Length: 400
Ligand code: ADP
Image (tube, rainbow, N blue to C red; front, side, top):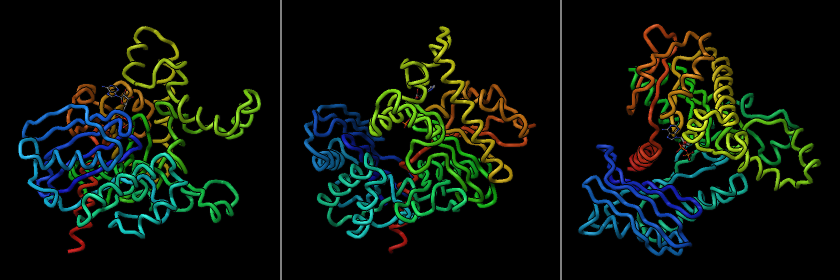
């Protein structure tokens, strides 16, 4: 099957065409600045590479550009739109309603719209992409793959906050956890790489990118996830604060005369390593370079980041009563060997020992713990698009 994977944001739309049998990426690209001045980037596995300005007033025009290019006799990888068997859409928030991937129907769109309040930045933007595809490919099967679905196996003891229960009942305030597509892909790939049965291992996945989360996966099911009701909770991130005492926020609001919207904007956009480094950078490469030049707060920001990751890993080892695999993934997790080394230095009590040479290797998957280590430590490149294509193919196959 040929699967078109769509990840639609408010002004951008990423796509890939994946052959589900060979898992080869036939083409991929990105529409940016939709509704502004339109940029289109496109690459195929046959060597076509484009970067051009294309006016795109809305997401429908963006999808049109993608489909026209994909089916272009010179630049394309298919002969007609109809060669796309399934479109797999990345959808951020499925609330408690969606515990797996689904065929997108009117009812699903309605149910998702009801979750818009839970993810006001992401869900409406995802739905605009879905609508654009439905209009241009009315006969093609659309499958929704949720970022929250994999985390739906958490038990109430993990997902409930210590708030009055009525707020969960009335407003569904609870931990949802995010990055589920990545955590699922990476935890399974780790088991496969190690020759283990995913249903028999305890894995902690550290997805460390601009947005960062840790997930405890026991015997293939999520036990806990560091992100919460929103993707703000948990680790210190690029610009997000992670865990913070809610009491401090009222104090800050009073002292700085801020309202709740201003506070939330500070927590999401001005905090994390950016805020700690006194606005030096949210980018870990820049922070590392600055550290070398003795920029004190840049070093502190990285130190806090690593410490918080180690604390979560320790707590999730406790939550699962043990851990077999610890896996690093995403921009920082895959590339920053110093951070990995620092995090692992807190985990010697778990019997973890890192091979310094392996830790500097670059590969799709690599085991960086040494022969004496009681826990496998791995670095695995995440591949959310492939996971979406797999899910979309599985849903489509289930219908045949
Ligand atoms: P997101 O998808 O959440 O936007 P990414 O997974 O792309 O984030 O990760 C972005 C982060 O990865 C940035 O902080 C960036 O600095 C960091 N990063 C990327 N490459 C490297 C590298 N070679 N060394 C250290 N950090 C890196």
